[in-house]
Length: 435
Picture 1 (tube, rainbow, N blue to C red):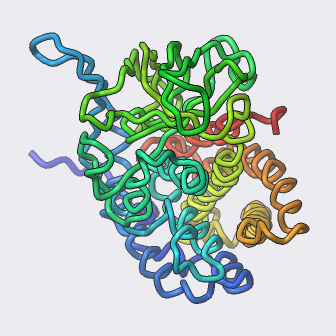
Picture 2 (tube, rainbow, N blue to C red):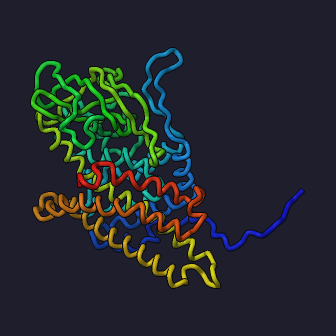
Picture 3 (cartoon, one colour):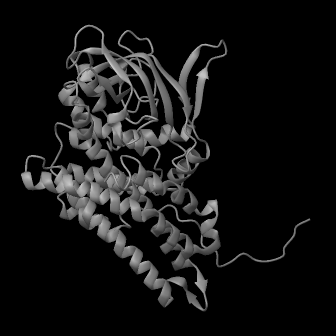
């Protein structure tokens, strides 16, 4: 029997099959203004791909099916592997194909590559944010590794600069593409990394590029499936930075035990873990005692990406809200034509435009480390931008929910996932007081 109690009308369809780049005039103008106009065609192609229903569904699936820790095999042998939903791998392949992890580090990188890469990051953030974690850490690690990677691992550099995503668990030197993670914080200290207790003892001699044994733990070990991590540990000379590969050059797994995956408010698609080092082998980068300075070379880039990611999420929330008001009728006219609603939307749009101008200008400054005033600008403004942009995100998305009303509070609207995602960028890489 077919029931027919009412007709459904005046309900906007979900926002999909739009071009995320061409629909963002402020971003297009900023890309031109900051010397990356040459990338407009590729950005338009990427924006069309990411705005498709297929890409948006991949983002939903990756978060609805979080990663699973496989600690043991059927025989009881340790595996310490992480299994993801297939959507994760597709999204990662797109990010790597679009060179979001390495565009400015290419030998033939053009002027404006930092800006072009920042725009790509913002576009991807509107589809799925968890996959950006391994991307931003790899992006931040590459320039440090290009300068400090021991000779034993120099063969990794081409794979770090490739546009191929390779999820196989094999020795890094045999892979077509590589990803790098980071492990700094411990239970007793958090951002106070000087209190770290993980110990590092040299296998033979002290010094840059030499092998050490690590004994200890990490409370937040991001992206445990990465091919290697940059970690902090206490050596004889003080807190130091080490290169810790997942697999050793002889093909055996390093002594890294995955204890559990974090159950997080948001960022569900991405694996964040707790680990223990049971005499794991790692190689010193730089001098003993120079760990914070080394790791902060990476941290500046990842903090900038936190701001980019939050901005991308806010842009998506605003797009959903604006699209809804175009389609929805209330009190005799379209919502977008109601005076109070226009004030709300105008205020949101103005905030986004300001963020766009700031972040694209900051991307331009990051491209010019040899110019003293640009270096000072990027060093001062990056933590300020992270603090400001990320800190405003939760309230911004909540306001977008109010624009939609009750449906905005329902999972199908996409906004609850964005809302849960917002706090992570404020906390990761140092919360407000640290900035």
